Image 1: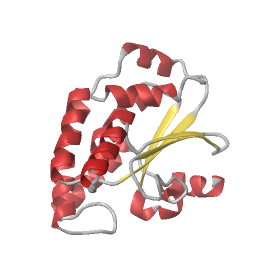
Image 2: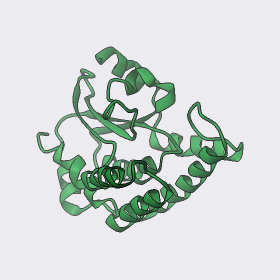
Image 3: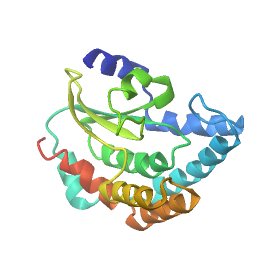
Image 4: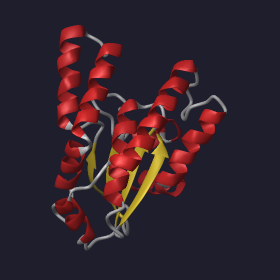
Length: 199
């Protein structure tokens, strides 16, 4: 695992480059990952707009800012993501805002479909669910903790809907995005910061 994490970090990009990658691919009518098609392009286009909005509006609470500014250990936050993923569009900008609060956090992103060896170490119920945040000791590349692919409320929403309807259809995706919009990244912040209590 340690070697795979190290190799993935070497191939990773920062948040600014990630956003530019998505934008540049959209200009070519493409999305990230190995699966192309009109649906993936449309998802990426919508998600790019969501991320633009979140980059401007997400605020980190004062207690979280204080906790992050007092980190004594250098850590890497490595996120597995894709531009077409609706959950990633709502979550990755929040993680970026948190990371920006500390000089001791090196925030990196890898594209899932280009890093399946890493992704397959962190499956959710056997699925390659994203985004996945890996918290890593920068000096040793040891995995400290992980979080994802969704906050607890969203995870429960998925479970409940699947129980009732069998599949996650377009109606559910609208419900989920509405929840993200109403929550304003608060639950994501709180859950990620719980993992930082030991630092």
